[in-house]
Amino acid sequence: MSGPRPWPGVPDVTVERDVAARMRDGTTLYADVYRPKTSASLPVLLMRSPYDKRNATMPFGHAHPIWYASAGYVVVVQDSRGRATSEGEFYPYLYESSDGYDTVEWAARLPGSDGRVGMWGFSYVGATQMLAAVKRPPSLTAIAPAFTASQYYEGWTYNGGALSLAFILYWANLLALDTAQRSGDRASFEALGTSLGEAPGWYWFTPLREYPPLSDGYAPWFYDWLEHCTYDDYWKRWSIDEDYSRITVPALHVGGLYDVFVSGTVRNFSGLRAEAGDETARSSQKLLLGPWTHMPWSPQGASEGRPPDTISIDDWHVRWFDQMIKGKDTGVLDSPVTVHLYNGGWRHYDDWPASGVAYQDWFIHSGGRANSKYGDGVLSPQGPGEEPADLYVYDPALPSPSQGGHSCCFDTITPMGPADQHASETSRMVLVYTSDPLSREMTLMGDVTVTLWAATTAADTDWTARLCAVDAEGVSINLQEGIIRARYRESVSDPTPIQPDRVYEYTIDLGPVAAIVKPGHRLRLVLGSSDFPQWDRNMNTGGPLFTEPSTAGMPATQTVLHNISHPTRITLPILEG
Image 1 (tube, rainbow, N blue to C red):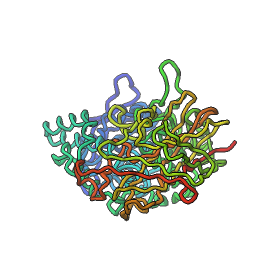
Image 2: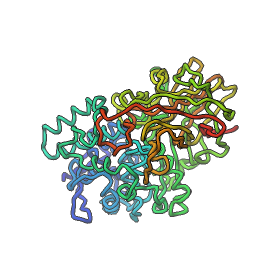
Image 3: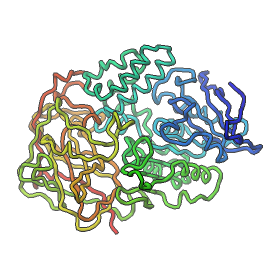
Image 4: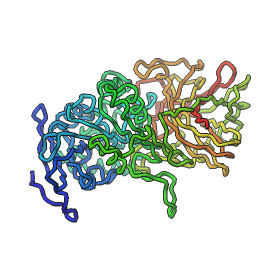
């Protein structure tokens, strides 16, 4: 540990490196502590990160800790157990509750601290906040979990039973890099770095339980995630949304409308607003949703030379902690929800979804040839008549490509953000249903679901759905998408097989949408059986997941029904007025 020293160019802030904190089991974790030069005692802002305390996630999102310290806080950035400088063995999620509790109470007793602690950070660093908060450390006063989930099965590792392939392979490789480096294994470290650069090729590798880049043993938990492909007790022990009453602190929930975890971010806000274990906490939840992917936090769709309609996440954090910890009235809770609507800019609402939202069903129609955007598929609020079904073939060797989406973490190797859907919508292996041009503006603000009536010739398969907005020039941009693996149609905890050629009802959760669809623009629903590499490919065999090579995959003929008895539809949250 080095003593406090001034920061070059910022003489009013000092930094103390590698300050030791001893956990309850004797493991020592290390932190860097930034302090403003003042004799006054100040609140602490704590970040617990697996990504090296020296960068404090600045390369990916937040301002540097120096900036936060200059705002009048003692800032503590700690390496999580088994990461960078800290002792112990890293296993995702496992120690974050107990280590978080111990670190909050340790930070409250640091020199210069007034005993009040706030936590901030995004992604896994949001998870370290939530997992600490469920244990109710007495000194924890407020949190700001950004771009994070409500649990680590659904909405993190899996969606509707399908593996979040692009994100999980990227993230597991990234985490394994640090472990290999700590072990002094240069060969594995370099091989892992190379595999990150070659990620698009590795997405095709099967079976995943034999995934070569992680075979050196630096990410054993990755194979545990594959083994536990249902929502079982392995996952439930870490699920925030199993019981929101455990949390009793105010929370600023920051999310991106194109973030991989946006559904969980919204769920955390709504869950704590309704069920937090303290009345003050229930009334002190704030949701901020912007036009962002997981990282970087630059507005999606902004062009060079045109100032983007954006907002400073860091400014919101300081306003949040100034009000929640220091007691200043910063106006941060003037409205519970602040959202940047696609095509609409920033708006303030009373809840998620806002008062005035009415859910409306829009139904699919066709003459039986809805294949591709050049087919005869129609989307409208009118219910179906006796219409012929639509058919397409899903071949796991030829999956539909992801065009943008809600993955993580670099758009050069993972599908992220809004994108022109032309390449995927011209395929005859998807069904496309497009509305007439809207006669008046439509505001969508809430969660979207698809109810699908379908049959397959396979023993198991996937069903995907994507909601798009189509502009006056015919450019189709993705708003949200979702997936359901057929065996998980009734429960992600207790999968049940399907019978080939039998019609089943499926619910596909697409998640939050906040968008304005302008007059003259159209809505579009795209149905298929793959969105690759956002999600892994279903081999259609019904066999154990992640154990079969791609050569075992077989094509399936998919039938989507839309008639009086089987009204396939999308349910839209439409804000009136």
